[in-house]
Image (cartoon, rainbow, N blue to C red; front, top):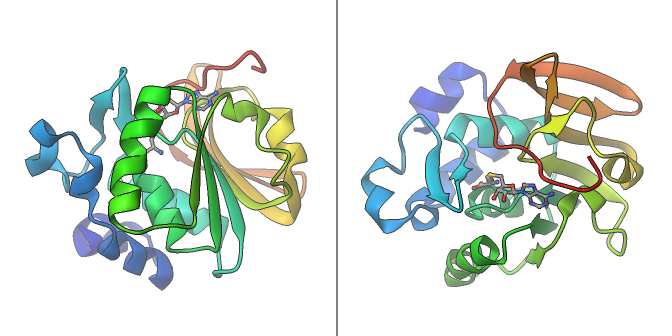
Length: 198
Ligand code: SAH
């Protein structure tokens, strides 16, 4: 997976590649899908939601340009896999999921692996986590309409990046927002961000 799906397709941050090699993706996939865990695609995880394709997870992590001492917010815990990868790249991860059922399932492998620098919360992640802000990076793994939620932009530390899929004119792009600038990185497909704030 690391060589074929990631390095060859532009993932060059060695810390990200090491984290992707370290985290056992099969633990975050439902049992009936385990033999497909390392496939080059997304997989369903329940509640109509998905675990993202490995390349997308690596790409989003690389875009945050983490060094190891940061606090990072993830919106959309899903399976917990991306939170697990992030937790190998920074000091603290706060991850928020709107379905309690998914948050509960995600917490199990994280505990089993002893990844104790991740706080899993249930709620509307579009509101962020003001009690833990500012964040040195924010990763949103569900698609926002037109713009990322303002509350999340407000919770970014100066110089920190927010990575988020955004739907504009019926297209969806993975975008990075930093210091008031935005950059479209790739054409993607995620599940929608569901929030009263949107
Ligand atoms: N990062 C995940 C992929 C998650 S798919 C992984 O590695 O598996 C997107 C997730 O975002 C879904 O679980 C969905 O329930 C959640 N979601 C959608 N809108 C949300 C919101 N407003 N707040 C928190 N979670 C949300």
